Amino acid sequence: MTYKKSRFNSVIEAFDDGVLIFNTMTAAILWIPNELWEYEEYSGDITEEWEQVIDSGIWVECNINEIEEMEKYLKISAKKNSGTLAITIVPTYACNMKCDYCFQHDYLEPIMSYDTADKILASLMPIILKYTCLHVTWFGGEPMLALEVMEYLSQNLIEFCTANSIKYTADLITNGTLLNNTNVDILKQCCVMSVQITLDGTNHDEVRKMKDGSSSYQIIINNIAENVKNFNIVVRSNVTESNTINIKNMIDELMIDYNLAGKVFFSFYPVSDFEGKKPKCDQYNHFCGLNVYDSELIDLCSYVTRYQSIRLVANMDLRPSTIPCEAICKDAVCLDAHGDVYKCALSMQNMECRIGNIFENSLKEILDDGDQKGWLTFKWEDECKECKFLPMCHSGCIFRKRVSGKTKICALQISTHKQLIKLLFDEIKKEETDETVD
Ligand code: SF4
Ligand code: SF4
Picture 1 (tube, rainbow, N blue to C red):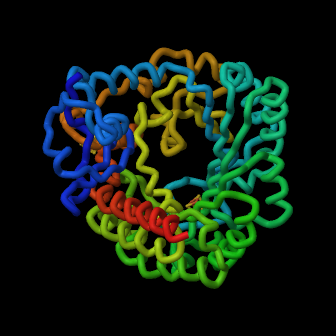
Picture 2 (cartoon, rainbow, N blue to C red; picture 1 turned 45 degrees about the vertical axis):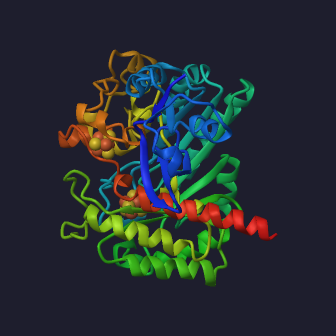
């Protein structure tokens, strides 16, 4: 058998007479000595060293066309029932906060009625039966403003899943202001395991105020500290061109004052204008250019490692996927308080992206309808087929391409992945050294 180098190898760094390689198809990270790396093709004995590089996908069989293989998997995965049905429910677009950069329109938005909840349950149940696991993401506005209907839907879904031997899990995206003891008990009964909370650094209150103009920072930070025992908490910070120092101060506060080292995940994303959508505050103009975000991200990730493993930074999730996102799968749905059905949570409230309404058609009819208004048609840009990052990017976010008219939107990590992988590699080395010392 003859082997060739994978087209998805990214050379991270050369050191110690070898190279550190990251393969974007398998997510393998391996240091390879130069005497192996110099082979473009290899057909000799398969020693232990060669077995390792072949198993990790860094060399592949010569007759394999990796792009064609990926295309095959993509087509199968989009049609195949993966076993898990992942749905997003927005029980209200209303919110108790008024963040300057928010693009959600919550003026006079209702809380989901029990009629709509019943309609959702009746529509979903026949579809859930095709799966072995149901995962619900609660999203808003602020979903906890609709806690009663969240509880009602959860109880019914959990009962239905239990009766049919289907595993049920849930997570929540919240602003974190309503995580008091009573509400937390309800969330636990709703099987919510993970909670994402936004906290934008010690200057958070400048842009993320309560609707009455009061501060939210201290309420949220107390709720995070109180609830690390109850949930996996991801603290999401939105990065602007000038708030990195405040995010670092917030990390210090959480790690030192609240003793949370090793107990929370962090994630860092740029504040972007989201393809021209209007933010709540018309004058808001602190969007973060990607060149600035790249360097801020590396700075923030390195800062986290002062206290805890880089593995507890959600941006490190550099896993490949056989599909670009759930939206191209037939049964993927997002449902809101109006009964509107979308394919992607980011597209909600954009009526052009809506694929139906459960008061007009059953969910089955909506999902069985041909191409679901173009969401199931997917292809990579030709130039992306030359890109090493294709298995992680797939030509970019389908919703953003749809609204912007762009044919490709490069993944955020394309320019930062080398430094992120290096941070992770150093962490792995450090752990190995610590184990040896122990
Ligand atoms: S918490 Fe802020 S960003 Fe989130 S929905 Fe409410 S106003 Fe918008
Ligand atoms: S959109 Fe950019 S990063 Fe993504 S696959 Fe295409 S060229 Fe690569």
